[in-house]
Length: 388
Image (cartoon, rainbow, N blue to C red; front, side, top):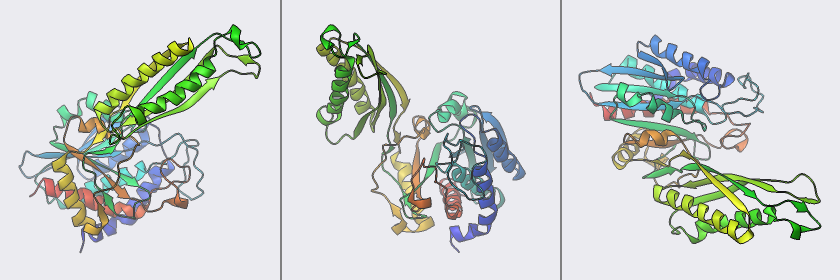
C-alpha cells in the first residue's frame, strides 16, 4: 500500500475540516477561529500546543525517541480580501473574504500529517508543526521570527509547500535555488506647477514627466541588468488631475519591483532612484521616490532540495516530480524563514482549478483530492529527516 493510499481513510474527515475552514475565512492576524480550530485539533492528538506565536500563530510540538534533531513543517492560515463568487455549500460565510489561495488546504494537510505522526510515529526526534498567520502581504513569518520562534522551537530546518494550479493534480515541482521572487513596493510623487491646459507654458507639466518616468523605468530591466537576471518593474498606479482642461500640480505613481537575487534587487532600487532624479532634472519637476521593502526572494537550499525531491518521488513517483519548472515572480513570506534556516518550499499540483482559474481568483477552490497527497509528503519527509 502506498503512502497516499495509507492516508485515504482520512480523506473524507479532513475534507470536511478543510471545507469548514474555507467557509469561515479570516484575514491576516485575525485568524482567531482558525487558529483555535488548529490548536484544539493538535491538543486532541496529544500534541504539545503553543498559541499566540507572532500574533495568531500556532506551533505544535511532537517528540519521539531520543534524537536531538528537529524539523519544522509550515502551513499558512490566512485568507484574502476577495468577494467569493462560488455557489457551493462551503463558500465563504464572511462576505468580502475568501480562501482564494488554498491556505485552507495547506492547514488541513498539515493537520492530517500531525495525526498520522502522532498516532503512528515512525520518526526519532522532534517535529514542529508551524501554523503561520498573515502570509498574504502582512509578513506573518517575520512576526513569528521576531516573536522568537527559532529560539523557543530550535528546529534544524524548515519546509513549506503551496498548492499550484496548472500543475498536474498530485504532482510536485521542486526548484533548485529561487522558487519565488522578492516583492517591493514603490511610490513616486511627481510635483510640477499647475496651469490651464490651453497655456502649458505657464506651468510645469507633471503628467508629461510622469509618462516619461513610467517609460524610462522599463529600461532598468532591459538595459541595466544582465539578461540572465530575471526582474520585473511594473507601474500599476497613475493618478493625476480631475478635469479635462487643467494641468494638475501633482501626479502619484506606484508599483512593484521583483527579483530573484539581492544583488539584482539592490541594483533595481538604485537605478530607480537615479531614473527618478534624472527625469526630475530633465523635466524641471520634483520627483520623490520611496521604496517600501517587502518579502525577500524565496531561495531553497541545496541539500534540502535533494531530500525533498527524493521524498516527493517516493510519494508520487519520479515521473510526477518536476525539477526544471520555472520559478514564479509571485512572492512568499516563507522566504523570511529561509533567511534563518535551511529548507525547501515546493509546489503541489492542484490540477486546472475550478473553472480553470488560478490563485487569487474569486472562483478558486482547493482540490480536496490533494489532502492525502500533501499529508503523505509531510509524513514521509519527517520520517526521512528524522529516521527512527
